[in-house]
Length: 517
Ligand code: HEM
Image (tube, rainbow, N blue to C red):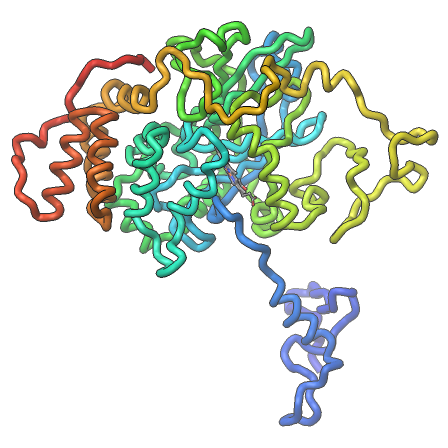
C-alpha cells in the first residue's frame, strides 16, 4: 500500500485532522451504511466541515464593504514635538501600521473602479496603544452633522423595491443638501476614480487636537501625499475595468508589494493654533470645508510605507476593526460633530459584525499591554488577566489604576457653553456651501480637468435623473459656478436629444471668487 503521507519528494505531509486535532480517515469519502446507504450522523468530520462552511462569513461592513489592505511602517522624519507629545510621532520613531483601502457604497463583490470616495483607514500599533486614523482620499465629506449619515448612505445604496442603485435618488439627496457640493465636486472630478490605491492621497479629513508635553493645544489636519504621484482613470477606462477586472485595485496593491514596489506616502500636517480658531474665515471644525494651505501650510512629519501583504485576507483584512475612538495621549477629538459621532459608531459596528471581543483578534490587538476592566467574558474571549489581578475597581490587591492626568490633558478639551442646542455650526466670515467647491472648479482644476468634470456629471445625471430633481441639479452646479451650471444643463439636454446651442459649450466661466483655497 502506498504511504498517503509521502508526497513523492522524500518529505511527509501531515495527517488531516478534525478541528480537535484528531486524525481523520478520509479526505474524499463520507461514511455511509453500505456503498449506497445513508450518510451516518457520527461522521463527525463531515458534519464539522459542512457546519463550519455555513458559518464562514461575517456580515460585510455596512459601508466600505469592498476593500483590501496591507501592513507597513510609519517613520517620523521631522520634529513636531512642539505640537504633540504622542509617542509614535516623535522624531526617529518607527511604528507598525495596517492600512485598508475601500470604496463606500458597493458591496463586497462590487468593482473597485466604481466612482466613489476611497476609504483610507490606518491602524498604528503604537507603544501607547492602537491609534486609528480612519480617513478617505478626500479632505472633506458630504455632510457636517452625523444625524444625516444613514439618510445620505441609503440614497447611494440600492433601492428597497428593485434592489437597484438609482442616480435619481442620489441627486435628490445631494441637491437637497447643499453642504454636499464640495465633496460631490471632488467625487465627479478626477479624484473620484483613482488609477490605483497607490496613486491617491489620503486625508484624516476631520480636525483633531494635538496636545504637547506642556499641555498646550492646537488643531491639526492630517495629509498623506502619495509618492507614486496622483493618477486617475477616466470614466470610460473605469467602465471597462469594472467588467474585465473588478478587483483591479486590490490586485494592484497585492502584486506591487509582492514585487517589492512598496508604495509610500509623505505624511504632513496642517496646524491651526488654538487661538486662531474663533476668528478663522472658515469654521475649522466643519467637515465640508478645507483649511487653505496659504493660511496653514503643510508641515512634513514622516513617511508611511506599505511593505507586507496579509497572509490571510479574512483574518487580517475582513476582520480588521478600525475605530476613530482609538486616540493615544497627545491626540484628541475636536468639536467636529461627525468625528464625535464616529467615536461611538465604529466600536458599536464591530461588536455587531465581529463580536464583543473583536479587539482580542490578532489584527486588532494592541502590541502594548492591555489592562482593561471592560474585558470580562463574552463570545470568543481568548485573553484574560493574571488570575491574581482583581476583575473590579477599586480593589485592595494591586489591580490597574486609571491615570487622572489623562483627563486634564488628553481628552480633547475645549471651551463650550453647556446648553443643549441643535444649532448647527457657528458661521464664520466666509462660510458658504458653494464658495470652496467654486474655488476648486475655477482655480484648482485646469481646462481639461474641468471638461472631464462636466462630462462625468452629465453622464451620471443623464442616466435616470428626472424632474423635479433635474432642475435642482442645474441650480446646484450653477451655485457652484455659473459656467459649470450652464454646461451641465446643455450637456444633459443634448444627451436627452433636446436642441441646444452648442456654442455655449465653452469652458467653464471664470467668475469672481470669495475664497482662495
Ligand atoms: C466604515 C459609520 C463618516 C471613513 C464605516 C462603518 C461604519 C461607519 C458603521 C463600518 C465599520 C465596520 O463595520 O468595520 C460612519 C458614520 C459616519 C461616517 C456614522 C458619520 C456620521 C465617515 C467619514 C469618513 C469615513 C467622514 C472619512 C473621513 C470610513 C472608512 C471606513 C468606514 C475608511 C472603512 C474602514 C475599514 O477599512 O474597515 N463607517 N462613518 N466615515 N468609514 Fe465611516
